[in-house]
Length: 287
Length: 325
Image (cartoon, rainbow over all chains, first blue to last red; front, side):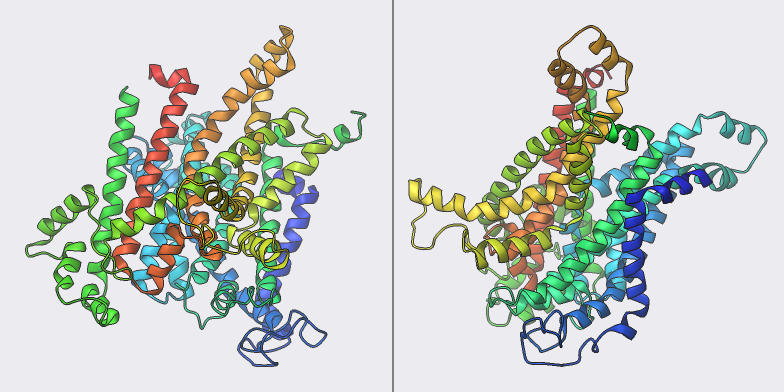
């Protein structure tokens, strides 16, 4: 376990990714302290181009784009992290239970998982969000979590099934350990890397999906987040009138944060699966 | 054969679950959605359509099970009711007008991304650690992390608004009459180029990474070593031995990611004002056209199930072990 994290930290991709993610986390916590203006404060004329006074320009409403993006980080990350956490929790619980218990329980849980996987997410979320109307960030997080846990459950189940027949699990069963203890103390620690992947992938998915739902106008347009910034830019035709900066800043935030997370995931994959690792030695050897 | 039957049974279950969602949601809402919609639509809807709308949601006389039965019957006969935004068209008519455009985008872009992405993945895995791999693999991963929303906005601004290389929206030039003329087909292709490009970019990273990783895992297998030891040509080992098996996970993920691709197409269409399902749906969402929003869920689910069934058939063709099971 410790070796896993040590080699993860030594991986250059992982450290760059972790740096990016840490930067955004700090922005989410301390952002309002460093933001050049309030989220809904009018500080200039409509659609001012980027300048020294407004680094990323102003919106149609004369608000500072950089300030809004910084303020929006908190909502976007909060939805991303909480939805990611829920997706991982549901997926892990379902996957481990189905994989370990097998039989009827497995059959029914697997059926539910497959149904969740095969019903397309975005169309389903659109239906949910449309009926709920002007969904708050918390509601959006719940909707995302409820529709997206299938993939994690499937992967966790497969891994649990392969662990179940190992000797140490048999030993625990023969010792008479209660089922919950086998699940929580014997199986879970060996699933950490899969759960980690699941979590990071889910956060990335949730942040993007939240932005998408809000872009479509299904969120609460008064809450400042990366998605509502894009929604406002779209409804005021910012791109068509040449105000690219209104879109650039939230887009950049989405892409950077996403790249940070995928770098961590990629590095974790390499550490967990040595075959995928590209050795430095190989790179230096003449081709 | 039993493999296919089991899969088919599962698809019917999945379709019914999607229908249950649509059936339950209007009933869980505070207030009656039909009345709300009717009030919001103002003078657009004639009073006679109230009954038709109620039937759309299965609000017929009788207890819930009867209502549900009627609802299921209408869904399975693909009778999705009346659209509010596009009155007096039915949801069916609205969806069918839009579907071909979305299919054009989704199928063309998936095919390009699948072929190109898999080829690049095979190349990266074959020379892993080489210049192409060490640059290509992380690049593919970064591209995969870029949401289609961002790609479309950037492509729209750079390629059509600034450089004016490609049109900013619509499926064909408005001065042309639809028909099989050279000018019209050309116009359709030019208008579809940017949305397709965006969708290819959105998908390709995934195929490169999946193919590369599953290929690398396989290259360590004994049968690959044996094939090389037998003196088979590089190309034979690479494609007939390694790639054929490495394709299996890609084929399954092809069907699974189709849902995401449809989702991506929805976004791309909205950004480019492209008259497919996404754009139509966007208009439906702004008008709170519930029958239309619900109808697209059924249609998308059907599309997903069809794709998964096709993937099952393809897996059956690629993997003889499934035929014996």
